[in-house]
Image 1 (cartoon, rainbow, N blue to C red):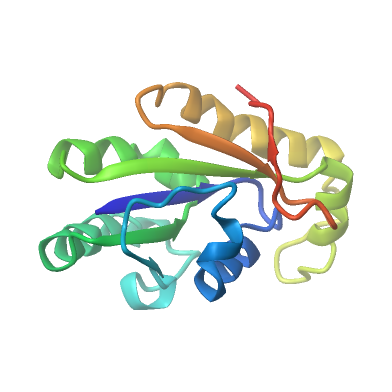
Image 2 (cartoon, helix red, strand yellow; image 1 turned 90 degrees about the vertical axis):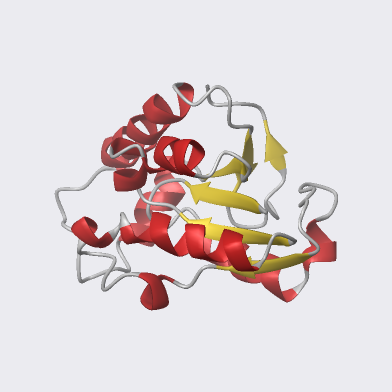
Length: 171
């Protein structure tokens, strides 16, 4: 089994990329080489109560452990959150289920473009947010990813029209 974590700032295009891969995995064969015979997304709503309830995120590890017992030939795509990195969920999974292959896809989108996307989220966007806010969020995640040298990481461009092309490392 392979777990592919998708990280990047809010509105970078993680969910859009996951949905595109699920719809047509072969279209992304030039960028991703998934080991599993089948590619599936781990739906947030079915695993933990709410994206906003970060205390529920550790339930993700239990859900993945359950899947490893049932489906050794699958690649599971997980939309990661900063809290997953901060709480060490990837390291916990590696320690608890060492036979699971993990990798990271970091979706990077130009901070100015990301800020424009943020503005469409009236439920959490604040006018005080700036391009620097986006840069800070990216740097926060990259700081944790640097410490995960044993987990392969790819960086892709989530910008409009970029088609998730692989880019040079942000590390």
